[in-house]
Amino acid sequence: MQNEQNRAEQDRIKQVIENYIEAMGRSQPDVLASLFTDDGIVMAPDAPTVQAAEQVNAFFVHGLGELIIDAKIHFDEITVSGEYAFVLTHSDVQVTVRQANAVSNEKNRELFVLKNGNGAWKITRYMFNKLPA
Image (spheres, one colour):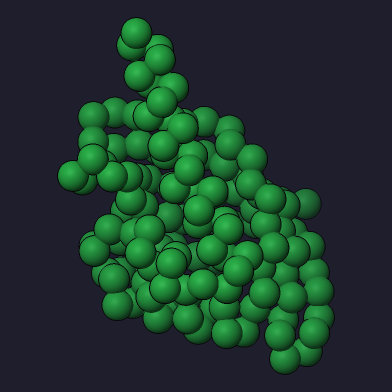
C-alpha cells in the first residue's frame, strides 16, 4: 500500500514537471509562473537569482520572448520527504534565438524542489545548468 501511495505521489510530481516542460515548449510564461509557489526561486546559469511570483513571471516573459525552447526531459530521481519533493532530471534541449533564428542543442541537468500545499504540488526552487562536454 505504501509503495502504491508513493508511486501515485511521484506520478503527481512528474506531472507538474511535465506541465512545466510543455508550457516551456508552448512559450507560455503565465502557465510556467503558475506552477511555482508564491515564494518560488529560479537559479539559471549566468543570471541573477529570481525570487517570488512577480520576478519568476518576468523571468519567463523575458526569456521566452527571446528564445524558443524545445526540451525532452528524463527523470533520474524523485524523493518525497513530507511536504517536499526533490527531483533530479536531465534534458535534451533545442534552443532557438528568435531574433537571429539561430538554433543550438544542449544537454542540461536540473534540480526541482516541490512543495505540497493544500494537496497540490508546486515548484518552490528550480536550478539548472549545462552538462559538461
